[in-house]
Image 1 (spheres, rainbow, N blue to C red):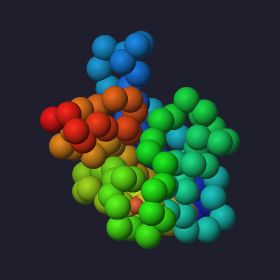
Image 2 (image 1 turned 30 degrees about the horizontal axis):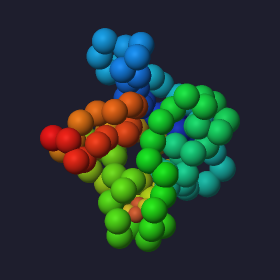
Image 3 (image 1 turned 45 degrees about the vertical axis):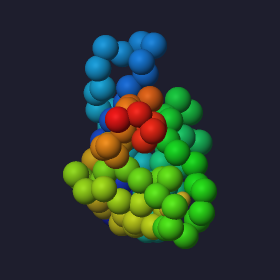
Image 4 (image 1 turned 60 degrees about the horizontal axis):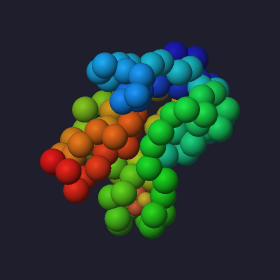
Length: 109
Ligand code: FES
């Protein structure tokens, strides 16, 4: 992967259109290390406004509102960085009911 890009495979799911989740790939131009949350925001703003993910709550890695799975590991997206040149996979965190894309309802198991 070129050093000024990140290839992100992201799980998508819209219960009104999709029978099951699938992965969509984005090649994102970046010029510095980003948090996973910054990457998701960049994709949402510049590449695909339909991508759903949780917004920040605490900004400090404390509340776990923003958790996702990055390459199979559960991480706080606001506190986990990805480097230019990376190829990553982002999925919703487990432990709740999938609402849409990366958004999970943790009150429903
Ligand atoms: S926004 Fe609170 S842990 Fe990420």
